[in-house]
Image (tube, rainbow, N blue to C red):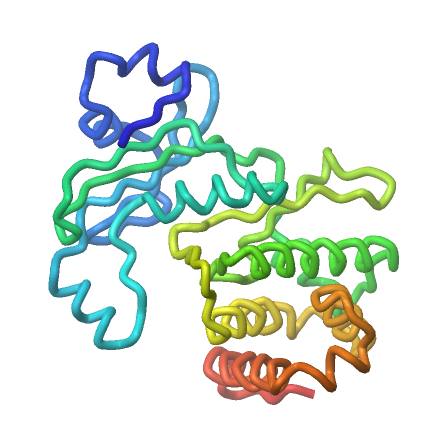
Length: 266
């Protein structure tokens, strides 16, 4: 499969896209044996490329043995972006994608997305909240956005699987009068399924909660999220959840303990 936006098609139309993307020069954000992520300039704009070189059968079997879904290429991110666009959830804009081969261990692929310029990760935007309280309407709107994105995504059969505040990016220049624009990024682990297992949903919500544990949220803030996420009254949500929120709290607390072994939650 291959897709090239007009600006890339004009330059790469008679060339091998994977060869061309492999020659790109830019700032390396992450590089491991099977994948490279870089920021580069093309004509007059900046983009991000994630290039997958094939993970090998050893890594595939290792992931399976550890009950993890192996990530074998850029198709996950391509499909996840399309899904979020269908759901009217703000995310990245893809401009190029290609996948070569059929052997999952040797599959070569890449995806290129437009850079989200002039944004700030919510992890950074919210990190001072425990010392300096934000405007109430701003906090309320962010809770609403995150709860609605989570609810829509999960009810539509999709999990992010790397679901933390750092992967939500606020667009300050496009956010006015309490109407905030927030984009969800980094979707290469995303899972889309007609029958989404409960454990994946718990993992997502627990990851989001874990990443927000130190920003000074109150119990009322957490209850607001629960009400909005479930679209039910708080009483109904907590009584008829089949242990869901207890599992979320337990997993998030365990994650926090691993990351902060010398600290205790208060």
